[in-house]
Length: 280
Image (cartoon, rainbow, N blue to C red):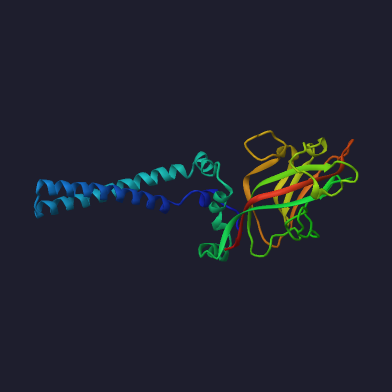
């Protein structure tokens, strides 16, 4: 899959814009002609007069079309070079919207399957829960992982064959047990605990195979107080494709292991949010 080119792939083509403008112009001309035909009928203009008017309409439509096309090209050429315009195109898009902008980056057979409705796009949330007890560096998804409710919904840290996932958000949550006997992370209330300093001062990174999806970033990006979004969520400004049958490896690196009074069996949960292809 080729890397996305913002100018060529996110900005609509000249043909798309011209087609839209031509459609609008035709609707305008059709409305004007309908009004003129009604006026002709009221005024009792004969066949010769109507023929002349039709000729003038044709000339008018041709001139307006040429003028509209010229204006569109000038505006397009200015807009396609504008960083502000290109940024605005992707502002506040849903994950589905981001997927549609990048659909042409999918393999041809997947694109065709989507077009033929043999495949569909669905909301997706891939998660894994890992103990971080006595650890400072943790691979949050591993090849040894098997699907199990409360632990992960991904086998072998890979997408199944044929599935493509556009990653738009990452959520990192922390929790721990209430006592030494409370040792099963699948029972913990993730998202209800504030980050300990060890996590806030740590880093998070993620790779797909050998390709960097998210370079080392401060875990503090997850720990903000924006009440308009889910807690501990980081929205990617550059959504990334996750491909099938490749190792997905998010990592948490902390200066030291989490510890403290009444902190029993600390664990983290990472959730990858986005849009994924699925059989229809």
